[in-house]
Image (cartoon, rainbow, N blue to C red; front, side, top):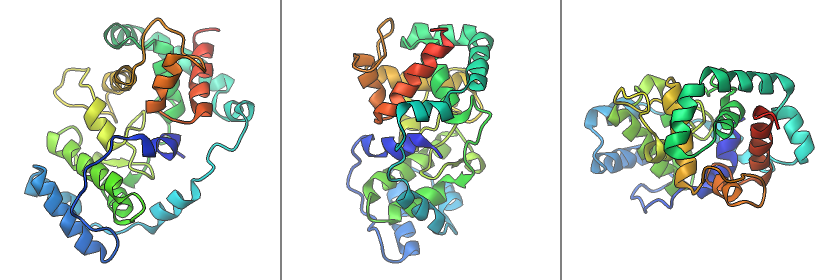
Length: 266
């Protein structure tokens, strides 16, 4: 389960009021979203390829309704399931393997390597774990049609279409988790657009396949949220508060810090 969306979902930027009316006939709603996308500058080709034939996914709504109380363990119980010796060993190997890249990222964004690698490990087991298999457009259309957070997910759906429009990912790679999270550190589409960095210089932000883009974008999110290099990041610090933009749950941010300290040999 992707904890990123489970607790961050309500923290994203406030979305504007959209014209598509939630509830009612799903295809009518999708047609209204197509009009919104066109008004936002999305090409007809992208809109048609993404939205034609899209259907609701009842499993997405069922999963969303089950998510309450995700963090119902003590800190000690939680880290025992997320930060074991094997993951620490792999994380230390990632620090060494990508030392030059992480150094360049730290110079630019001020986020220490162990924090970035800790997040990478927790979100997708350093890109080797489950990145999600859900078609993002279908997921977001389903969530946007549901009236509980329609404006939020209408905004995410438009952001997902912009990712395709920009050429960052083809539609076939627009797959993710149960709230539309994408890539190796599980960005929601709006965060992908806002914080994504083309750090490998190929003209695209690819958070599924490009490790430089993944790690630099993660650092950029934290820097933009106020994370400052050379400062402590434990509970009660300004950097700990800055990590709320990543995940508002205290236990998850404590786990990031704990994991980072283990990676740094502390």
